[in-house]
Image (tube, rainbow, N blue to C red; front, side, top):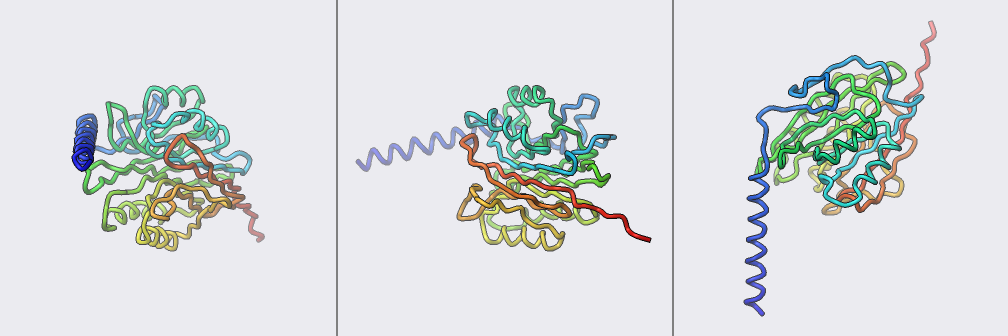
Length: 288
């Protein structure tokens, strides 16, 4: 019996090594940060884009935002779940989105604007965080931070969208550093977020898979929230994915009115989507 167990363990280790070697062989990490979009007139080799936009992201002051780690579309039914989410969202923020021909076709069929912050390529297909919306962004930039042990980067999108009250919504879509014991790289990624929020006076959405699987990481996020004035949209019936007893996926906001938040149970990924329903804050003219 002992010999059988040893043999099983040995074969499992060989399989694990083979998988790791395959991943490293199939993956390519670009030297430069690159934003990929489905708008052909834009420069797909740039880190940032800027464009003129006439239509607001919200619908008559209502703004529905969803965040979901789609797990590289590895689970069956991802397209059905994604269709349901896009039908009910003004802005959909994905993490671990792999730009396969199937996902590309989905985006085209739904007439969506796509922004992808390429973290790396796997089997010649870009992987990273992705914004999907009915209306394009005013501007967007890609930022990456490499995992210290495995060297594969995590990506982040910092984007600005026009709202119907003529303000600009700052949206940060993040997939946070995961494989670290300390906080140095995790905090360095959050510093980019803090810098983006520092001078922005309008509404803000900060969302994504933040890998907040420890007390120290949770405190790091809480410190950022205190410094920037954001609060969390917490689902009433909270079925968000947890690890070590901590929830991983979050939506934080500022200068918006939260109507409600919900988490949606799905078998189409290892993460459950989180959705928040917002209204723009009413602005009254100042009396002379």
